[in-house]
Image (cartoon, rainbow, N blue to C red):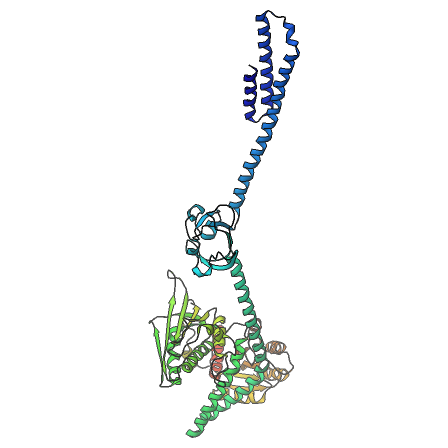
Length: 579
């Protein structure tokens, strides 16, 4: 009986509870006592014998064994729970890691990996077993599992299970211990964001460097623009006048050559200025197809018979918000580069179309392709740097393509070389499509019904005043001149009833042009103000001071006449509505 009770006590200890073990020991002692008493009664022995030494020893042994069993089982229980808990925590930790952990066999196939495999390679961990590590690399030679190396690491470009390109940092270590089937262990970390950030930072540094170069060029150009453009303007006006008045063919030819040379000089200065330009251009809604159809034949004639320009466009209207003069310069530079790349002649193909999605406003695409020597891949981006040229000394300034990119960027577009090779070059230009609009005021109608008026010329350069006076007088305007703000106020005061327009330079010696303009407006508030200057327009000032037009020297005198008439027509229409 004692042995049976002892087994019962030990069994209860399996429940890992001290209290249950003690309870079992107490019940065993009680039952043992009852059995002893029963045995004494049957044997006819006195019950007092239960208090014998042997009885107490046996009861004490039952209770002691029960207590010890409970304590031991409790300790074992805590150890088991701790082991199970640590394994669970380890399992959860491993599968919560953002890095992909894995083990490989000798053939480079996955034996195990954690749950991060789905985020890194786009496939669940269980499905990774049996797949080769190299199937995710663009080139298997990127990561070679060499048993002679203890650790292999590097940053690689991969494609995940969904075909998405990623950058990962991979570390693989040789496994010399543990499971004999495991030959390699390692981690894969997705570092795509880091690599993109590095790439973007390098791109931003390069852009900043380019911007600083552009800004320096712009500062240089703006410093010399006013005075130099005044000189060019005078020479161009005089050349045009002599060419118009002379009847000798030789003199006309000489004036044409001089005019072309002056135009080249003007373009050189304006190219420098455009490279550093920060302000918007003189944008107007323009039909790009009509624009190309107008300029392509002209440039084809200039290139010569060896060269052919083919224009491929649909019979449609493609609107863009652009500056026609600057866009002309874009194609002038592209055609010039194509000509230089084809010394023996060739064909230039110009294609224009619209890229739209579901009928929405999209981008206008223009490609200019030649059949020349081509541009090497490594120079496809370098050719857009200012002053970079592949031409021989004296054959180019290196500003042409830099200017092309700058002008297109000012149109919120971009230009790039597509598929650069040694068999021709194709430039692709993208410009946002503009909204469809009607034509501007009918220029022909404006000039057909001319409105006479008096014009005040306010400029501190006598030669500029003389040339402008001759031009405006030939068109039938009454012209008054002034060299300073004070003189201009006096002249306007004298002719205030007949003088509707002032054409003034923005720089009048040391005088403040704003104060001069305000003093003129105090005499006549509806005065039409047209600014001619060697400086770029200040858009804020133009709006605040209600300046009708701002011309940057050198400018086209015919355009000045058109804008004067346009302003006079608007003034007359406003007066008619007011009446």
